[in-house]
Length: 341
Image (cartoon, rainbow, N blue to C red):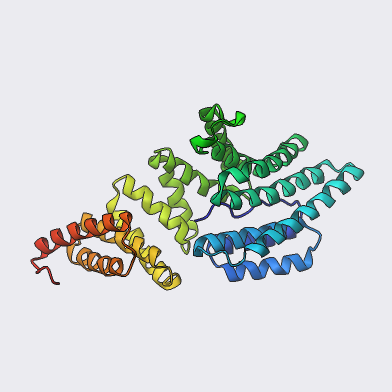
């Protein structure tokens, strides 16, 4: 799933507009178009850190979406280049006294390091902590130099919230003693980026949906997820989150529509990812049963059971099988069919 898409910044209108266009394609999960645009921007702005960092972000999004690591080396190489370009900007801005450009330089550098930390942290949270310190230092310098770069609050918020969620085995670390304070600080920073940021506004909104759901605040998460789906209807990622909100709030009629759309999107774009096909059809069966569409729910339950026959016999899969057998039995009773249908 999506953890980060962009850490951007620029006062160049042309670069801003082209970057935003590439971001939109990325949010819509149209990766080829987004990458083609970023390659053009790299060609036209070879000394700017933005396109290197953003292209890395797009590769990260693609790899998370399709659960592959095929372009990981390229991802890290792009961030390394972006960090070098940022160092050059910082050096130049210090010499010229251009504080605005200096602030962006710190932001670029913090963003590049932060992306590296986020990706490494998925596999090993402890390994990402020391890397993230450097990112946070640069982002803090960004805000100290120019407090109006509100996009910097997004990665800071992600860091502070992530620190509060580190496992108990790392509780000895001095900077995570007061987890609740750190968590609240992170949420406030994310909310600030969402309300006042520019480039990271949608990303902060997406992250807040995750955070609110994790905090048991589905009611707060729901309107944010609904807005993202309305603006990016091609996105599977946003629709998964909306479906979760709807289920937790008991909005089954809406959930039935959401999961029906997800089934269509997953079968069209990710047929080679059986787990996503399984989850989309599983929740679609639940939703259709809840709204009284018993014949359709029965069809989906049978489909899920057939999929599970081809999958590993895990505890989670056994639980899903039990749920589908229950729905199948109830639907058969409702529509008067025999157990073999």
